Length: 147
Image (cartoon, rainbow, N blue to C red; front, side, top):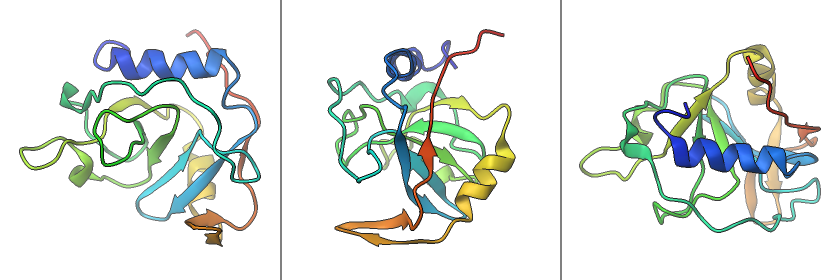
């Protein structure tokens, strides 16, 4: 959604063009919520990122099933490379009077069956991380395909 989330979309595309996501893992999988990736390698080591971006949760896009949103810390303007795919309608992640929200910037247009497979993997704890797939779910490569 380059038109509604230009900062987040450009940020994501920049990481794709830099091959940053190649070899990273989906490191957090919570069925009926979301799958998160884009920041850790197979050893669960966090990759060095660029500076955080501004939260665009005010863009009107909703955290519905199949949308991509920027992951962040409690600081609303802390998103870097990590993203998540909503595997359910998560309206509690949308911007509201009491919630800074999570910026939706894209959606899955093909491969929702793969997303469903990922959300079904067995998870456990790894170090101080919870909900980690017991077998690595690796992003082998990410690329931009023009329509």
